[in-house]
Length: 375
Ligand code: SF4
Ligand code: SF4
Image 1 (cartoon, rainbow, N blue to C red):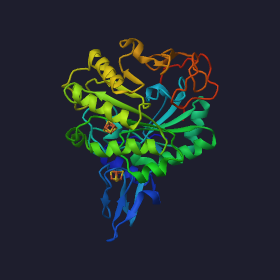
Image 2 (cartoon, rainbow, N blue to C red):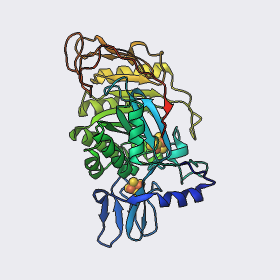
Image 3 (tube, rainbow, N blue to C red):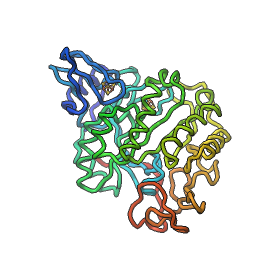
Image 4 (cartoon, rainbow, N blue to C red):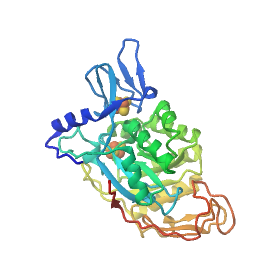
């Protein structure tokens, strides 16, 4: 059921009714009795009747209430669009999002859902669903993966866990597309249900992070912690001209990632003007290719320039790290050809880091076409 929303006041009233009690793992009672939320790096201390920075987790009658039982966006996307390039290539992911975010990025492409209750123009219409219905839609459409995305999934982790728990029983894999503003507590809480985790490493300057609504250190700590907990991690840096595109800053990002693991795929993607950030020009292809070279020189084994399909030549493909054979040939989100044998190079047998289906076919082709899910 989709309900028409007139304004943010009626939306808040509606959302306040579609909540659950926060997970005990994500709640702390302070010595003075106030509640602290541990779902994201803000660690908000929330007095009775107030909400946290994200606006969607709030206290009522001495309880921390959290979003539950709805989706603001649902779609079936190629997993390459998340983007995960080293997990179940050529398969589809049922993607769902709720409302709200703990950041306020000026270039947010999902601002209508992420900036709900912060920006009066961001008024989306939630659709009330059950975990079972989402999972059934994924199965009906042949999806292998469930993805919590479109808003910041950390702030709605209880709902994601509910969906992923149900999905796991049906053989589906859980994944997060996140800004990485995590806490050790939420990463431990999610680990039984989330296998794939994409983090936006948006910059390597704390000043930039504070303008977007977070801190650099917290994102770096999250990336390290995710690897320690053995999540499959891929990183995206949206390269915005004038914001984070200097050789120096890109080199610092690449050096940091190499230090965590040279096997982390790094997606360096092109910016286009959106929402409140309309001044910077689109990212030129030369900048993406420079970022690619910086990543490779730093020691990263897999760097993918993105958002400019067909413009970056061979760089869209996955090459064997040993013999350099093309293993997965792509055009944008399309898998054109896959010559891997399970988790190994089909030519030399070298192991390729990632989460690969057993006995992956010698050739598979994704549709590359996002489509709405029939829920
Ligand atoms: S999810 Fe983050 S921003 Fe929202 S209440 Fe919890 S700590 Fe605060
Ligand atoms: S963290 Fe992501 S969803 Fe949130 S405002 Fe930034 S770009 Fe949008």
